[in-house]
Image 1 (tube, rainbow, N blue to C red):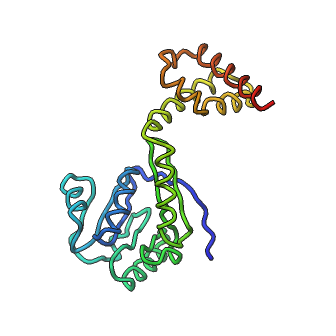
Image 2: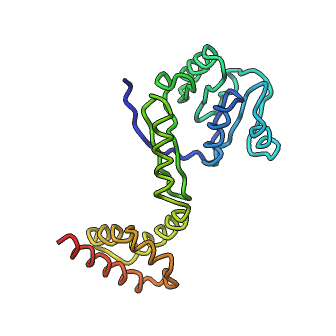
Image 3: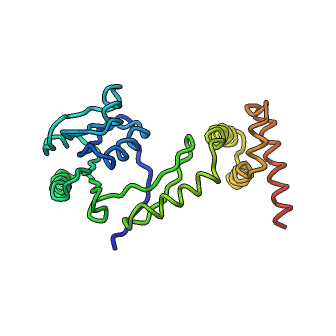
Length: 220
């Protein structure tokens, strides 16, 4: 079985080519658009959603069969046509150019696989079965969606502010780690959402120190 290394890749403005225009290509394209990639879809026909995205200028659509020249300048390639032999040929052409390729109908033979994803603002949760099919990862992400609801969109932005203040105000690395750990408990997150003084560095650090001490007492 191939070994996989999980990572988050920054794709803002980078060309990503999706070969294919069906439901799978639409799903791949949707994830790329969420990552602000420069998406180029190549297919004689596309789904209504892809067509709408094209009309809105969210992607570029070449209404024809795939050509290897379409890969020029691409960061990633997605071979998502309904013809396995075409997908294999496109993946091989991408490899010759040093471009990582995802093969929709044969994930283990591609350079990367795409996990099931839950986005809550800056919080990105993923699950993968390492090419063994999407059913289990989709189920797990559904369970995560129940645990981490839309409120986490706000939580992530709040924690970004807290981290910036703690880094500026607290010199000791060990104390920084303790304060940031205390900041992410359910109790703390609820407090931050209700606080009107969140940008007051002195009050914030004092509150974090109290939470950290409280946590130490519970662990003792």
